[in-house]
Image (cartoon, rainbow, N blue to C red):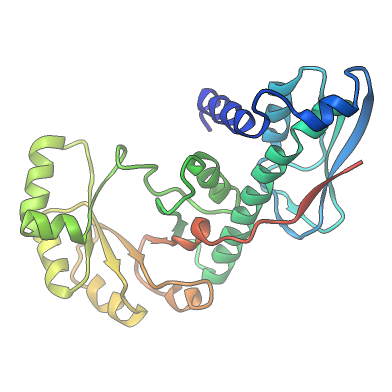
Length: 275
């Protein structure tokens, strides 16, 4: 992750929660009241966000020390101690909620991604995320996907071209949309086209698209549509694919399967700060 952007995001998260002061902790505990707390998992899964525990507390106070016992991508179980935090009690408690929010959600995403990878059970197909992320939290959620064994799709509208159904409708056709992109963006930018029918797949191939997505298609249909795509064109499946039916796509001749549910409807792991 981009270190400077991470620090900026964490500072914003802390500012949102603390405001001008933690009224409770700063009133009860003097600055020299020292204590120790443990970050403990109450769930099983894949850990993500370990180093953020340190980053959060270093932004609050350099007097807070964090010792990590588990690291990103580690499998964790209920009862595992993930980290020990020591220092001024008021600062430990001030950072508790932001820190837990981060690692709970990130570990939930990493765990769900890992479950998807295992359900597909085909290392030749890469499981990847989408832009269906929590506003302001995308950097962390996409990193969590990689901790679970998945891969990142584009980060935003700025780092990849994907011509979707509404682009096609307004442009008039796949061909016209691809031509306009090629003229403006140049030959260094790969172009992905979302297709929904045999006719659209054929048109995307003729337009020299670099990547073709089969959108909302069954495994049987994907097998048939793939026959229309030359080997040099990357293929992707997306839409209507769930954790429950993912195994049905394991034999599909595609390079990627993108899954919105990795980030938009995830169960956060239960992790607590225990004194």
